[in-house]
Length: 173
Image (cartoon, rainbow, N blue to C red):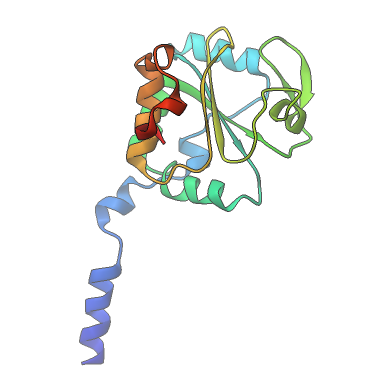
């Protein structure tokens, strides 16, 4: 009986093969290898036929960042969609590495992320830049479902950001 209950629990609680097949490492399959040189990233986006950059501001000890990477950014459909439309890079919200902004100014990652730079308030946050380095939209905070994260991407890809502010679209969060 114990063996039967154990096997039953394995079947009921184990992830499906489809879910396992769809999950891929976010660092490898969601993000492009980044140079922290945004003019260079924009040029690569332009050459790749992308709309611009999707920049994730994250922090090493950020539980919501880790959850998003594990549950959302690891999904093949998310990775394929975002990489089709954007050059996707990550910037460490607390980092000391140099980053070059679209205008060519050099900052530390944390200064670029902060009030003096683009004004990111916390992690995880996403900033979308067009091919000229101008902001299209941004999203603050953890997104907890694949569907909502896909809607965020579609909001930018469709150009809806030109017509309606993301903050006035409660379905996007």
